[in-house]
Amino acid sequence: MRRADWQLRLAEFAKKRVSMPFEWGRNDCCLFTVDAVLAMTGVDYAARFRGYSTALAAARVVEQQGGIRQLAVDAWGAPVSPLLAGVGDVVLVINESRELLAVCNGTTAIGPGPDGLAVMDMSAAIAAWKI
Image (cartoon, rainbow, N blue to C red; front, side, top):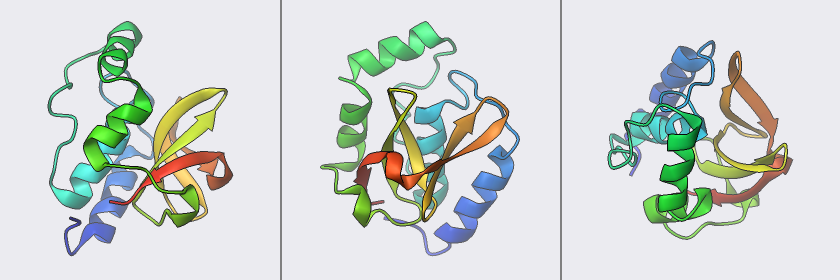
């Protein structure tokens, strides 16, 4: 599923997003994650729901998809233990009592934050999807 040069593509993706602040419909947890997967695989798992630009519209998309976890299941299948996640895999993390998608970066997970790339400890991960 991943391209041969996925590691370089993921590094380039993260470099472009390192200072990009969180923005609904552009750099939120779902689009950050599917854009990272797009960079590694060439497959856009968000094609069917791109185009929203507000928190309310994002909430509607997530609700229509059955929740964040279901959105990931529909894209990548059944989750595995986060202990099996490796660099580039998708993880579901709990941050401030909310479920968020992020990308495993080894012992940490990365995703969008208010001022750019946010880093979370993988101990916050509750599910993972092998990419």
